Image 1 (tube, rainbow, N blue to C red):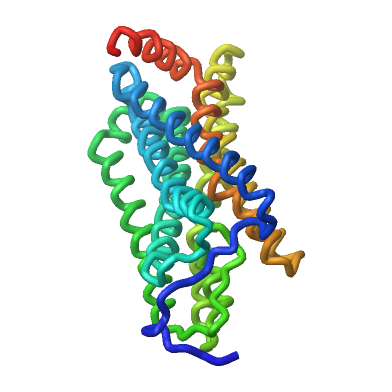
Image 2: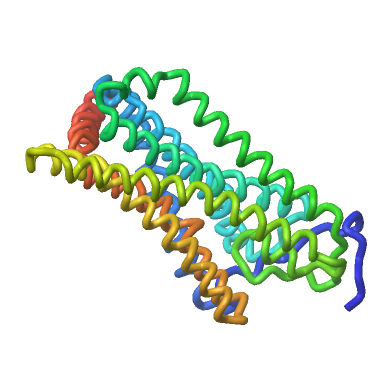
Length: 312
């Protein structure tokens, strides 16, 4: 195929999840519903935590940041897809595509770091309860979030700047509903060996190290819980970790599912459908997981909903 220098590229084409025009209204309605539920659910979590002084603890501070991150991640992909369907226009500018790649990597990376930080918070709370307020002080909590954000931004900028050095072919069709890094690299006519090596190396580091930290935390948590004398204490300890474990399973489960699906199938369209599972679904389900499995959150949400009519 004829190569074209990246400075002359004006736009890419996002082909979406299907080329069948009859299915476009259904996909629009489905993703609009998912997006609205995601925004409302995560906003409800943020407002409930902010309005209840009993929830002003490190655990719920991190949950609040996680909910804000989920809103940002969904907003970086879904609205553009909805606009394209409405306008019947599949285009996205070259700059817009690179920005989307960058923001998706930032927010996915930040989510990965946050659930790791939350596992450390549970580890300290259960294994060192008497030192919890001293260790998990406000300064450390803010520092952990800032470090997670910096790592995610550096990671995203590294990949985005490496994409800038590539030249692309005339076929600029992306069989996806957003600009995913792997799909963009497939369109390059120049050598992407360094880019792919960087992807594998950083993925191993930024997925393997946090996952190892989570496993380490929960091995010690389970060991500490089993040594507790009362069954009530064990139940309370496990209940505080249940929601987080569900989020961890959802995040890594969908991520590994996308990786496996892309490895066993040559269909980019099937990989795009699988990518929905990590880029859209977890952000919608996280608020339900925390509000349904956490007693304090359920009480706070009910209190917030009870005050809402009076405020209006």
